[in-house]
Length: 230
Image 1 (spheres, rainbow, N blue to C red):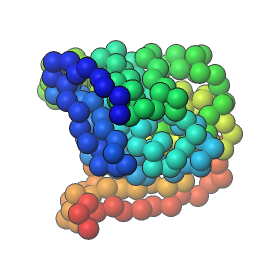
Image 2 (image 1 turned 30 degrees about the vertical axis):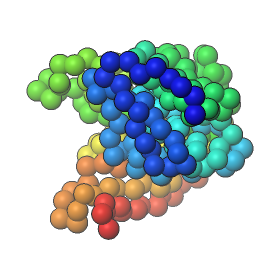
Image 3 (image 1 turned 180 degrees about the vertical axis):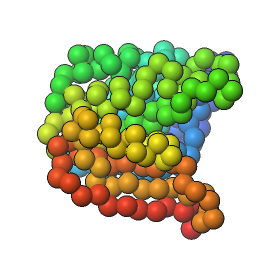
C-alpha cells in the first residue's frame, strides 16, 4: 500500500474485501448501506470497463471493479473534495493503472470520455427530491443526497450516451419513485431487466430499489426481493 496524507476530518476505513481501504471524511458525505448493496448487485465481465457516475468517495466503482475483476473503472464526481479523496483511495490501494478519477459534472462526461464506448455504467446518485425541510444546510452533503444540481433524467441521458448497444446500467434509487424511474428509463432506450426491492424487515414497505437495465434491451423484467438480515 502507498502512503497518503490524511487531511483534517479524513479517516481510512477498511472495506473488508481483499485488503482494500477507502478514505472518507466525517465532514463530507460518507457512503451508506445503499452503496454496498449496489456494489454487490453490479455484474460485469473481466473485459468490461465500468463508469461510476456521481461516484462520491468512490466506493461503488472501486468495489464493483474489484469484485468482478473488471478491466478498468472510471469514477466521475463533480465535488472536488470527494474526487480528491477518491484519488487518495486509488493511490493507497495501488490501483492508479486500473482506476481513473474524473472531477467534472456528469453532463460533461460523454464529451470527455466519448460516446457509446462503455460496457457498464453504475450510479448511487442523489435521489431524494429537494424538500427544504429535509435539507441539512451543508451544501456538499445536500448535493450528494438530493436532486439539487442534477436530476434522474440527467443521469439516464448521460448513461445512455456513454453505453454501447446492449450495455448495462446499474443504479439504486427511491423505490417510491418507481413509475417515474421506469418512464425516464424508457425515454432513453433502457429496458429494466432486474428490479430488486430492498426491505429492512418483512413488515415494512420497500424504500430502496436496485435496477439492472440494458440499453436497447428486449422487454421483460425480473422482480427480486432482498430482506436485509435474512
